Image 1 (cartoon, rainbow, N blue to C red):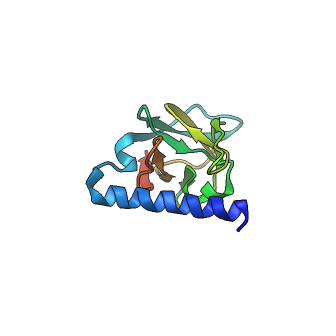
Image 2 (cartoon, rainbow, N blue to C red; image 1 turned 90 degrees about the horizontal axis):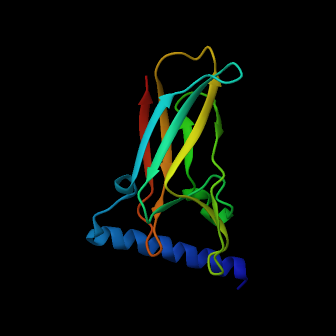
Length: 150
């Protein structure tokens, strides 16, 4: 078995065990450790800019975008505008060196993600924000939130 296959199997096992741990009544989910908000910001270069703010509880992290590890692409943080095309600018994140799972990039603390739309796109928007919160031992169920910006 190749080392990549072993890492993928290990990661699948870890994420599966995290789900079982949550189901057994740990009581927290990703939405419980991350506060998400969004608001219009100062337009840049003729574009409407919406800023999504993530406030990640101490001791927890999210997988960045890009995650820096293709095995984590399915749980990386993402923002999309429902029914619209938009450019999304993600923060850099923090590199984690992990000899077991492989290296990856995380977000911790307060993070801002910019969503760039055409300047003529006025009115309310619905944003879909996806992420998974993990600490040193556990990953919680992934979250997929829809928030509205008026």
